[in-house]
Image 1 (cartoon, one colour):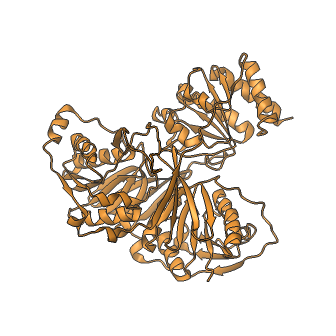
Image 2: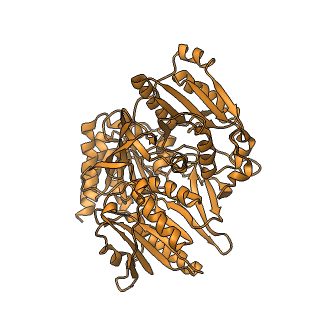
Image 3: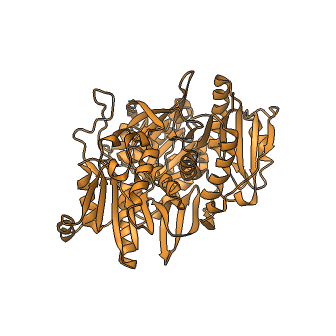
Length: 329
Length: 257
């Protein structure tokens, strides 16, 4: 009996994460291929209005886990509420975007449900007999592993930008269901004291279409202002290599790489970045790569579609001017 | 304070990955290291020991070659180690690893269990959190700052766009990210002392487990290698010319602007 392809629609302060819309859109295709209904699950407080948005992306049903106890994400409250709902409704699959929340939530949920979990998948193949097969990067992105499971629900987290969010269809309706939120007090041992979000008008690194990134060649924290100026002309996010972060020039949250954020924007502009393997693991899936580096032997040039060998302090301001011309027509 | 660090030995992150005749990842000739993120966990454990006294135990699932990684951890200052070394480990998935570790930690006292948030081989970032769920303790993952006071821990966790500060009463599982501390190098004296520190090797049967208890949920059916990305063009001319040409190409050829 079809029990559904379930998608965790992650919201933060009433805004749906872009990756959730991407996996919802792909979920619609999977639902059509498998004959399963597409079901969205939204957790939080005062989230009813988000149901309409989610319907537009093809959900047949939307479960709302609406409770003050879910207003802010904590491992225990979300694991508890979702596990109870999943155990009750028995979906065939439960997919989440691979975000900071899911990286924490999905393993705990998988263990509670007694099922496997395919983490950080970048593709899903639908097989008539084997159901869902996930492609995952392993060994710093130097190989891909294909995994599947016979346990149900199939649990997986999907990397941002693996799929494309469809154009929403405002006329598409979904059945909206208020799910009972049951949270086991034993799951409330960790107390959230404070959340500090760095306010920024720039897009999130993993969601941006364009990323302007700086490395050791930036020589100091104040020089990132040059990259910010370039980024702001085209609405880009700012990123950094580990070298720049370790030097204390820019905060950890801007790090792109194996142990930082993994990004796949349409355009990645690497300024003063040598292109170490661990950095490439973080941006190698970018559609187009531009490299600006003084050193013609820098490894980054082996993967850049377009390269400029030159002093970034000269090149970046000139590029900013050129981009301004493009943007302003 | 009893501190347990779950440590994994992994491929050097610079290693060239090839597939062997069976289509599996070839480990021949690959340099093995302590999983980089577990190094931060070991360092954090040593700092807690320095502050509160007590013992740091390294817990590892691995083969004979894992002993080298364990000795390095002992050389850094850990006190003892348990290596679970069993041929059945090859087929174990993340749930299985958590099951094995949960049986192993039953044999040792622990106030806090530390691990790197993920390993650079499989990269699934699951085992430590699964372990916490299995043994019924709270977990906080991706921790960038940890403060312990008595039996309370305050952890700052990395979230999308910022940080969250959380408080928990120990015992708990804490997974750490790069930058939580600066990892020390083992001293020569440390390396000498490490040789004498207890490293016990046990099998699954010693934990009351057999292979059928650990049937994996996740099945890896194949590995493939990525198509290497090729370099494109280096734009000629001075900075003014090159940037002009770049802008043109991004608009007309790449069509991204």
